[in-house]
Length: 439
Image (tube, rainbow, N blue to C red; front, side, top):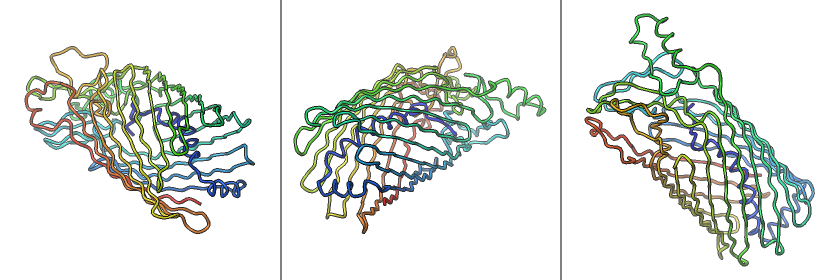
């Protein structure tokens, strides 16, 4: 149920960027492949995939993805997508480990859980099922102009998102140069289990009250009634340039404005004394607006026996989070119907300006604070392989396996007392496995 507000606008951004990526890939289609597409212009093209994602001792996810595409003549394409995923497991709550066991109230207020001495507190209520549907229409207006429009909706138990996107492309220089302008808007409704916590209010524990009525009154005092929402507006400008018969270059700039409820209602912070002993547990609070900038450049080349691409992305925002992403894919064709692909990715980010791994009891309470490691200092890398082969009738099967490691880091905070005995920034490891079938 925990939401990553650092990634909350991924869906519309990917929809915008996807048009550029699709265009660049098409530039490398061989004449034989283009003929095959023309022959199937009136047919549906269907892709199905099943993906497993598993973190070590934490979140597990299973996702089913289905896409369908139909071309109407040479000028129009309809794309449909349906995603269903299920998440279970435990997620870091933001509290720090202690030398004695700790008791936490569940987000609903109904029940509590205990974390053993020395263990990182994990909220074991992380479970949800999400359904998302996308519809997208691409229309070629003339040899130089193409437009694209789409809508999407996503629903899970405590979260709903709806959005729309549109883009326009203009080709120049015999289509060797393509300019792109895309925009997207999403409206999300947040309705957390147990209600939205009052910012930086203290977690109440049932054992501290003599009656259920007294506990429930205290718990309700830490909650805000009703749901809340947030809006995200994105715009992207891009250019794709064919450099020669084998290489192209793509670059874009993205601007994203997010306003509304950006706090993660399931994350908390420990308030500790100078000995590192927890004196209180409070709910986090984040600003209600965020302005993001992204810069991206990618080059892709067709080799004698494969395709390779290299990309770099830089992100920054007014929360002072900056990130750098280096990524490459190398696909090698062992034969006309079988290929292997290597995927390497490195990511590094600096913490937002209100990130604190814990709060000190002898200092004033800040206006904003979060101990969510996902918006703290970190580096991460991905190493993956993929194999695919074409079957009779134009069908294709592929298999992907990736290893992901995330290394949170201290942002320079002095660690007091007994907290020095614990790993407050543990490494996270995950495996992704995916099977896909296209027909």
